[in-house]
Image (tube, rainbow, N blue to C red):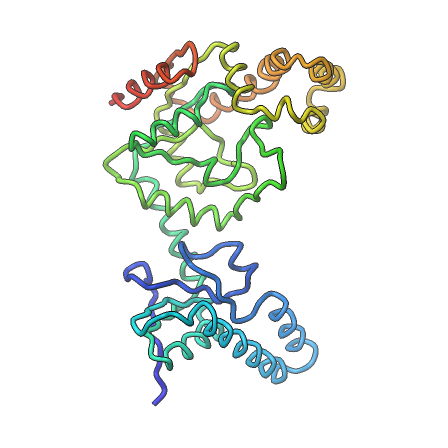
Amino acid sequence: MLRSPNYTQQPWAETYSEIIDVRSESEFAEDHMPDAINLPVLDDAERAKVGTLFKQVCPFDARKVGASLVAQNIARHLDTHLAAKDKDYHPLVYCWRGGQRSNSMALVLKQIGWSVTVLEGGYKTYRAYVRDQLEHLPEQFTYRVLGGLTGTGKTHILRQLAKRNIQVLDLEGLANHRGSLLGQEWEGKPSPQPSQKGFESILLQALQGFETSKPVWVEAESNKIGQVYLPSSLWQQIKQAKCVEVELPQAARVEWLLQEYPHLITHPDLLKRKLERLKSRYGWEKLNEWYRFIGAGEWHNLVEDLLSHHYDPAYTRSITHCYAHIERKLQLTDLSDVSVDGLLDTLVSLP
């Protein structure tokens, strides 16, 4: 008698040995369920081959070729990743919409004797869940925004807060993007940002790890971080939150930036190319002045001028537009461990 797999529309209500995404590698790379592994029953090239046959030759021939490829791929997964699984193995399997790809894998696994569950509606069911959660979950938290001009060590301060077990939502980290030109990756091939869908998945996972009874700290950001956008529900909550601004003398900010971003000095040619992006805004006269600072090794003068003419005005415009509630301004003389620890004590004690 043919054994049928189980089906669910609420996979988050149960625990599984493993979550198997049987979609192609590009579909998986765009987004997937948290902790899922990718065991494609058809890879990108194979999907394209079957799709071309279906449209240009004959649907029957396409299904025959597709079935052969699926069978070969499932066999390979059984001989490799699945070979050591014991009889208590209990995976969740999903594809794009809970159709032939997930059912093909699940049917074979079920005949072996494993307890297999298929996600009804597949990835589309999961995406609907993510959208619904991100519409309602953000409003359950109280947010605190940490603001400050470039070079005031906001990211460093938030990381130190997190070490004290304070809830911190690292939006730049989740988006894999350092907002400023000075902070972008310069060596090797930069790791890409997640897709919008992928960003929303990891953002939801982060929010679900927080307690609603405790505040969540975030860095002052716009609603766009690189190429990804904050969900509107979260953005509205953050905009309405109380904001604490860190103030630091410009000289200390310059020292911090040169310490944090040594590539400013070690990659002068690349720095020039990056600064050229600002030509349309400031013109060749200002750009050539920056180039002269670079050529002469006047790094302090360069950073001071970039702060005064580019970063500080941009921050002032953004903070005025985005955050209406500047609750407090806290002044530091430097970003030494002693100074930061004192600031953390103040932040933690805020009502």
